[in-house]
Image (cartoon, rainbow, N blue to C red):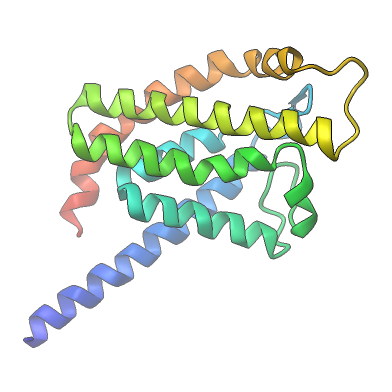
Length: 193
């Protein structure tokens, strides 16, 4: 291996670490931009947008790793989750399923964008990421309220999904924008690899 090859490999590894850290930081910012607006038990944030972008721009593997790093930072006690929360007690929170979903959002969006690297492919990847977010997060929330958290009076599965209808229009718009931004930014990110 030549010196140039070694430098290039080291540069690539360093750049990957920077990208992972950058998306973990963007998730912390996105978690708290508007997290004080809470509908039902769900804070309104920009995390889904950034999780989708992580998968689209970093790829499935690195995007998912960046979301795992974000989750571990929060579980370690750093207040990076919505409402400036963090710590191991968030594991039993009704909204922790959304944090889990971010890993799978980045993975799914990244895999689809890698397979279909067109504008339409990126938008579809972003919308699939949104579906992953809602399915994992809402089912976790329902289970948490039913099994280990104090559920509101008359709480049902239908009510859990009704709560999610409030942020849905915002999330659809932001997902489409994430797909379009991801498609435009991907060549720029690739140039530096």
